Every structure is written in structure tokens, then in C-alpha cells.
Amino acid sequence: MVSRVIPVDPFDLVIFGGTGDLARRKILPGLFRRFCAGQMPDESRIIGAARSEIDDDGYRAMVRESIREFGGVSEEQEASIDDFLGRIGYEQVDATGEAGWEALAARMTEDRVRAFYFSVGPSLFGALAERLHSYGMASAKARIVVEKPFGHDLGSARALNATLAQHFDEEQIYRIDHYLGKETVQNLMAVRFGNTLFEPLWNAQYVDHIQITVAETVGVGGRGGYYDKSGAMRDMVQNHLMQLLCLIAMEPPARFEPNAVRDEKLKVIRALDPVDPHHIVRGQYDAVGSEPSYRTDVEAPRSTTESFVAMRVHVSNWRWAGTPFYLRTGKKLRGRASEIAVVFKDAPHSIFGVDKGRHANVLSIRLQPNEGMTLDVTIKEPGPGGMRLVEVPLDMTFADALGPDAEAVPDAYERLIMDVIRGNQTLFMRGDEVEAAWAWTDPIIEGWQSRGDVPKLYDVGSSGPEDALMLMHRDGRKWREIRA
Ligand code: BG6
Image (cartoon, rainbow, N blue to C red; front, side):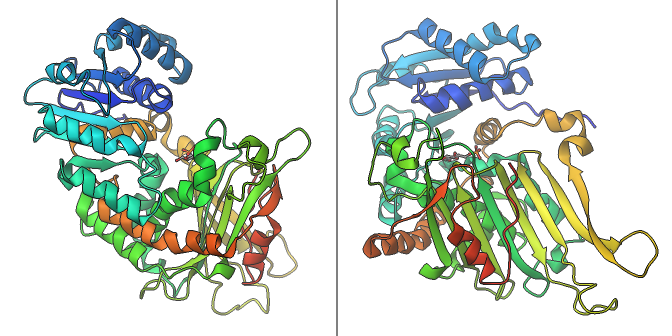
């Protein structure tokens, strides 16, 4: 099998916030890897735009450094850096003033796709959109890319959508959720809709429950200021976990086409029941040995922000009535593991005698690390002495199954940026989807605030607070283990 790289048409890409963390860690190294893969035509231009007083050469030096630090560059690729830098330029612009905008506009090539990546805080989205328009850059082939957080509640998300809509059509707005760019997340759709095996069983009649876990070992890093105002609910659940839930629960779209997929995802969000406060556990990590607590990390000794959430969610429609979805995410847990597990019901009757045939099939899809799928099936335990049953995994790691092709897979940002250039919105969130997700999230957060809820503490390196285990135990179920 050979990976196919389909070159895109020449483009101009402007990165607002071009000297920032996301640009240096993800966007620029990702673009370089696409360049090395032969996907970026020679005439394409990448222009960093920010407040810093540097020129083209100063920016190129920064880009070179970022690629070396974060690009995972091989010796062979190292030789291409200069070539890549030949496509890079820089313009000093004032996002809220007028300085630099004429010069930026002068750098645009007529009649080609131009993408504007807003790698800046949402408070600047409106000012940027307005200036792109007033300086004549918002052509029919222009598109803007916006990062999360897309608002902090329904009201702010609506206001952002309205501001962007003043200058750009929905077809020109690409709201990034980088989870949708992950290879295995797209594999969820391939597995569900590319096989006949699973879909007939993918409903409340056969599925006991579904678990979605995104466990991280990292803490809040240097982002304490942002994170403490956000918490795991806004930072992870409202977007990434919600998207995973949608892909797992949605009806088959008629086509793998942007609005067909997004219509189905939206229906899932709208079918979510409000969450009973007894079905949510919030947690905050606590110091263990030399490992600091969350409060120390964010330098807020009284913070009641959650770094962990576990919850039971119901999708109230014909397919899922009665099948709970358990969601869990947290920082500083014992392992890094993102996984979706579909736990099927027990066989309806045991021909082997009581207890001997009661083994549930579990399909688990590992998003990261060690991307792959495992299906637990029941077989006979070998040997004489009667029929004893044992569960064994049918285990597939994509790297083994796909060989070198799996390694050549672009990371989430690389793929999503190329989709922007191609004009494919399938893996981006539509405005109504984001609003629906906030409409569901807001009452949960408001409930915490009005009750003065304080998160339960959990040890750094654990699986989260005890209450999260109880959430499942009460239902006679068990979380899957988070492996260290
Ligand atoms: C980001 C969150 O969107 O996703 C971070 O803001 C989180 O807090 C990150 O760590 C997780 O992404 P990934 O790709 O490392 O799973």
C-alpha cells in the first residue's frame, strides 16, 4: 500500500498570531511536513502576521527554530527547510488598529485561495474579520480558520458567530476542533459505516453502554490563566468529547459530505437530555509527593475549577433510548489514554449454565496512543474438564496492520489545514453545532455555580476521584482501566 498525497492548488495562508505558541508548535511544523510530503505547490505563500517587530528574515529564523524544535525533522527533511522558508514572509500588523493592513493586502495573490488562520484569542476575531473585509482581502476564495475556545457560553458563541457572519459566509468559516483531524477519530466513521458487521448492532437493543475516556497525564502547563477560567467542562467536554459522542451516536449520513455529516451530529447534540447533577462528578488534582496540586499549578489557592469530569449522558432518540454514555476526561491521571469502548449486552441466554456464558463483547477504539481497535470475544478456555469460557482480544494496532502507511499519516493540524485549502468543511464544526453544544453545557456549569459546587480531590497519577468510580458502580458497571 502506498500513501497517496494529492497536491492542493497554490494558496496564500496568513497566520494571525504567527509568532504564538500554536503557530510555533503545530501550524508551522505541520505545514513544513506537508511541504516535504509534496502537497504544497511551489507558488504557495505563508505569511506570519503579529505585533512583533520583525522582518521576513527574522520570522524565517523563528520558523526554522520551530520546525527543528517541534517538527520531528529527519535528516532528509532538514535539507528542505531552506526551500520551505523561501515561501515564508512576515507582516507586522495591529489587529485592532490600521497599521500593517495595506502591506498585508499587497502581499495577496489575485484569484487564488487565501486562508486566514486566527491563531489569536477570540476577543480579536471580530477586529480581524472586519479588517480583512475593509482592506479588500475577503474575496470569494477567502476562508477563515478559528480556534477554540469558540466562546465561553451560548451567549458569547452566538455573538462570535454573528460577528463573523457580518463579513464571511458560513461556507468560508472553518471552526477547528483538532480531535476531528485525528486519524483514528475519522476511523470511527470508517469502522461504523464501512462495515456491515457493526452497524446492525449499534443501538440500544444490543449495546449496554458506551464509555468515552480522554485521560491525560499532563497538567495545565503554562496555561493556568486560561484554564482556571475554563475547566475541563469547557476545555474538553463541550468540544472534543462532544464531537466523539456525536460520531459514535449519529445516524448514518447519506454521504460523507460536510452538511450531511454535520446535520447528523447536530441531531445528536439536540437529542441530549439535560444532565442530572447526580450523574456528574467534578474533580481537581491534588499534590502527591513533589507533584504539585492543581491550585499550585494555576497559582490560585482557592480555585474551585475542575481538572476532571465524569458524567452519565443520555441520547434520547429511538436508537439510544436506555443506553447510557459515560464520558470522562481529566488531567494528571495515571496514564495517557483516549478510548471509546462500546460495551455490548450479554448473550441473552447461556447454554453453558448459569454464569458461564455471560461475557460481554467490547469493541474498544484507541484514539491515542497506540491507535487501533480491540474486540473482546468469548471463546472456550482450552483443555479438558468441561466448558469454561474465556474472553480474548482480537487486537489490531493500526501501525502493525498498515505498516509504513500508518507512520506517514499527517497529524491533526496538518490534515485540517489542507482541508481548509481544499475547501472541505466535513471535519469542521458548523456554527449551529457549536451553539447547540453550549446550550447543553451551560446549565451544567450554571448549576455548579449556583450550588457553589466544590470539585472532589484526586491524587496526581490516579484514575480520578472515588466518586467517579461510584458513578459507574451504582449502575452495576465499571470504568475501563486507565493504564499507566
Ligand atoms: C486542547 C485542550 O484542546 O486539547 C488541552 O485545550 C488538552 O487542555 C488538549 O490538553 C488535548 O489534545 P491532545 O491532542 O493532546 O489529546
